Length: 270
Image (cartoon, rainbow, N blue to C red; front, side, top):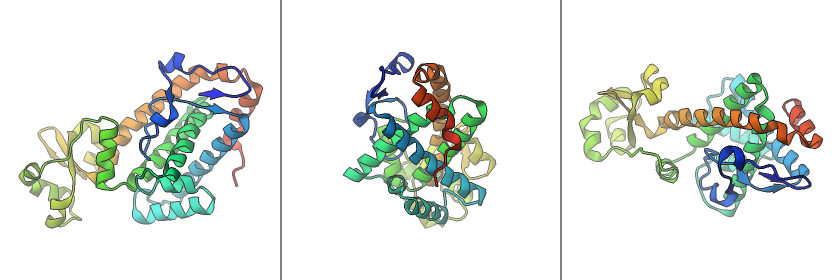
């Protein structure tokens, strides 16, 4: 990430490589694997930071009200809040995966602002915990808006070793799938995508009896697949915050950025 009116901040020394932003925004649901190479004035830096902070606070308030983020009703409520707060770019990212110009612009704002906030929230355990919790809520909100095809595209885009069960494989375990998704009918099971993953990847689903277990594997519906990806995403977030903590002294050589980042968590966002 590069900022105008100051010396280059060389993230590649820590992360091994930067990447051009256009090559990173391949899907509305991002994993933020690499920091982007962008040129930002401090005014844009602040605008993007406050915009994302506002999104995360909406999610915090929703959780405090016991809104179920992954449900249709919960997602609609949160998206209405985002649109009312003039956060239409983020609402768009949570409404499926498309590749329009508006989606691409929304992805740019999302990707860059995420890395800006990493610098603001890496400095203490309390801030890191808050940031990871909110970012995971945003991730689940985005993922809940994906269709089965969107999920398949996501898996392919990020080169993940998961494939849906074939019709024959699904038929072999249909009874178990039905028992583990009791709210579905047998005919619905035939049209749903399921993924076979090591049960240790989805312990939350195992505890909640929301997947079928057989020979050390969990059979997970596309709707619950967010748990598989979410666990990996959280690991990446926590590792990324530690990496940013090591870079923080360099960024804070500039008093303007240091002041903005230190005061961001308590900033007024309306």
